[in-house]
Length: 128
Image 1 (cartoon, rainbow, N blue to C red):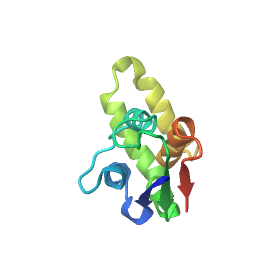
Image 2: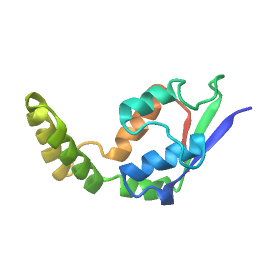
Image 3: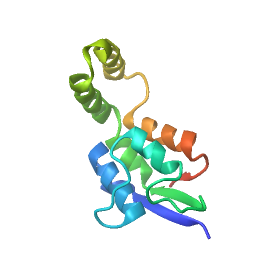
Image 4: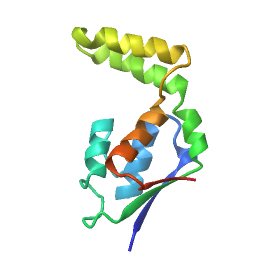
């Protein structure tokens, strides 16, 4: 039987709350399911909480609320944080990405998350 993990879009007000919502959807209150895109990709590929048989889906309810919360403003915030942490050799690339996002171009945090789902768990994300 397919296990359905529910993400409540109203609970996602930024990337930090997304990590909390997805962690709790999979592993219950206080649950953990990664706190970055690489960890999410690993978890979706069969680790840390997903059913061993791979028979699962994520239902992201009210995803349009999350899409707005994880839109341009949150993307600018996340890229600003990344620019502070990235080694000097990679800073120019992050700053260029940040400039494009500020100009209204390129993917948002919401898009990044959906892309990870599509790449690592095709067909297992239902946007409601």
